[in-house]
Every structure is written in C-alpha cells, then in structure tokens.
Image (cartoon, rainbow, N blue to C red; front, side, top):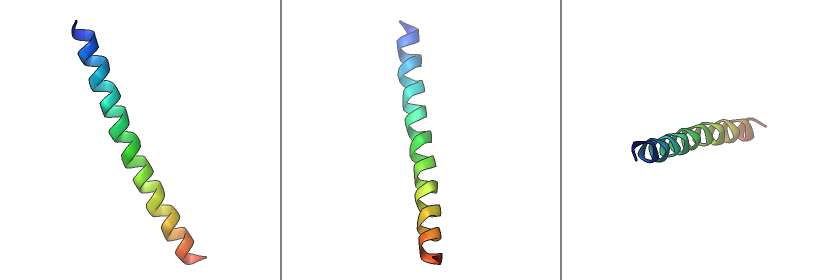
Length: 36
C-alpha cells in the first residue's frame, strides 16, 4: 500500500520539476527572441 503513495508523490515531483524546466526554457527563448 505504501508504494502507491510513493509512486504518486514521485510523479508529482517529476511534474513540478518539469514545470520549472519548461519555465526556464521559456524565459531563455523569450530572451533569445528579444535579442534577434
């Protein structure tokens, strides 16, 4: 039963990490776009 909670928490963590990475990538692209 405990492993289900673990998997759920891990997927939430992966999701938030992905969100942070996408936000950084988006900012980098915006910066790049303004320099072109």
